[in-house]
View 1: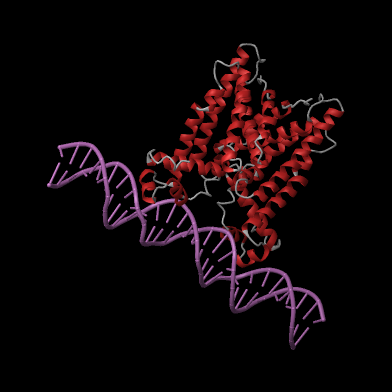
View 2 (view 1 turned 90 degrees about the horizontal axis):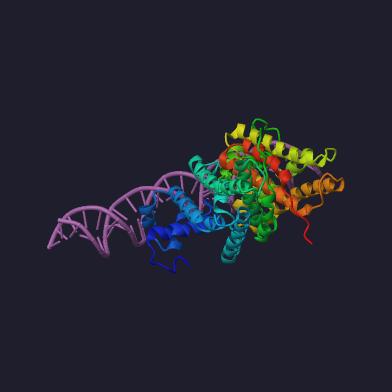
Length: 203
Length: 203
DNA sequence: ATAATACTAGACCGGTCGGTCAAGTCAAGT
DNA sequence: ACTTGACTTGACCGACCGGTCTAGTATTAT
């Protein structure tokens, strides 16, 4: 469906094609030739825009992180929504995203960041740090939400930073398990329990 | 340290070497030649014992699952311990395991099953199912523990199966995040919150 | 002693990997 | 008209991939 719109510029076409393929498979499993074929681009053009496969992956992470932050994450964490409702929205968004991706590829791709984090963390420290930064930004969305909930009395005081991190870990864990079962419904089933997570303030 | 003990039989040496390398890096990133070199074994010997790299990975999963079930998982889920204490033991065990592995390799390897699940699930359905079975066994340890805690009144009635699955997902999520931060302490920091997870019985 | 079997040795295979490069095409700037 | 520089083309590179194969060496059974 990407090569159906050849009017978008070459660099973007490479980027989005690679993103889709890295997401659906893995970094190591997808070759540059394969990306070029799918994006209807020649090898030389590829290396005109990206110095290496690694740099392409970095760009893919940035690109996806942006789409993520301004896409469904921004919607789920809508400041106009009551804080705890945002958590439910986040779970729902994750679910529908995976369902959509499953319908296209036939298999659950999981979370691109989680996938890459596990694949690359022990091999590339810079990429690991980059993925960690993405996670930290996501964690912050949770933290702000929790802070608000504590402020307005919906939730009792707690260590919001730690709890936010725990919630992110739980979300990633759910997606990991759902991918292993190849069943997005796991997200719907386990997701709501994210609200039960709590880490008290240490003193 | 494996090639220091060349008296163990060749097959086992290949298996354990591969396990260590798959765990510390990834399936795709580790080549057979590399495994043979590390295990001080020739290619021909390798293919005498294992028909393919894929079958080796399958054997590695079985081997690790066994060590896991009869190793620290069995200790953590000691039936003589009070149910909720077992959860704390499990977190501790995961932490110390990762610390030990980090000290050896310099980087957190994470959970072999989680790593492989994310890397292989979209590529090999049989391996995915195998990893899923390992997760299901682990989940069952949690479930039994929760059932006991409910039975003796320590915990209020709940959907123990769903909650057990949620706990496993949380554990995997924590390890994923810790690996991304390359900091095992994340496990200690977030781990105890596993006890706050709850999924009510639906009716 | 001999035959059969289990295992080891390592050269070799086609294919693919990430990456390079020389030779272009083409549109804009002067 | 001509130059410049962005972009494209596709052949090509050495390295390495998983896997095969033949020749050999131990070990064991007879």
